[in-house]
Length: 441
Ligand code: SF4
Ligand code: SF4
Image (cartoon, rainbow, N blue to C red; front, side, top):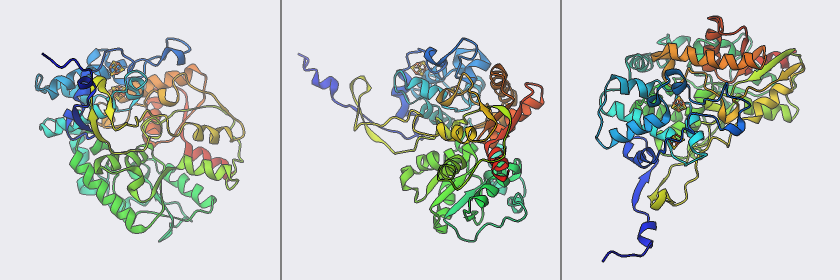
């Protein structure tokens, strides 16, 4: 006769770890999706109306269930169990997704499923299975391998952004990691950041030989390439002996703070240096009286939470444990729900600028709608990227804002291009530019 004791049902049975190199670690999560669509709709309690209630750019653009996280989870579950193979459509469904994390925070209000990690593990599986990434992504990986930057630009021109009159220190406690986009495309962001550091009296150095952070290669599933970049970049920074690495790019910030530790199976605290974004630095300098916002900016302004600085920036801690009945885990797992980080600081800075009338969009903070540029989307699906930015700009227009500010060159570029193409008559700025203009007043 079978043992009637309930104990056996509670006994943890399956070992698992938060390791995206084996999609089987996420079969439980993918199989337990109940299709409630909390990953697609913003909770109604936060919504003033039905107009901007979707949180998933992919589901909203393609209007087909497969493109939502719940669709990808069902497809991934079947693939992980060998019941479904790859084809062109499956690859499009997987990669036409900005890995923005909106689904993950939505699901974690319901079931605490690891949606974001499941999606990352599926991209790693696509590469392991020899079908991913997409051709546009492979071109970027080649550029990084050859020139150490996303754009295939000459590596010796990487520091040409440096403004006249600012010379980085040979050795300092703070290292500014400008990243590829601010180095080559949006030099105004790197220049503003350097001027802010100088104005606050902070000596800063650059990496002796800065390479791409590897955001795109990591995001499209090229795990080994991302791991090699992570190890190389971390070693270089450790050798400098700096205490703080500062970024002005939300995607670089997420890579250094969260995804480098993830690929190397260490904790964020084990990096050996602190990773901060410019807004954290300025917030501290402003509140301690070192920096003052002086010059007014008379505008009705709204702030866009860049995914990498917001819901995706909770620090990383490796986890290995066992999963038992009803999915209970041992030891206890601290879930990353996107609620630990940087929502108030950029808003406090913007509100301190005389003349700024800060107004919020309906979807804000962890519910913000992604700009559509990141994680390999702009390169492989430019129409989708432009559509997502235009949809977000509709929200900006809805609240009557004249200026849109974000904390990431990817967001700035994508919004600016959509605005230029006619989506909205809105001024698009990075927060570094706004701060720099106000302190120089
Ligand atoms: S919120 Fe979670 S459980 Fe609900 S449909 Fe989305 S992935 Fe599935
Ligand atoms: S990561 Fe973003 S785009 Fe991708 S399924 Fe989730 S909410 Fe949609």
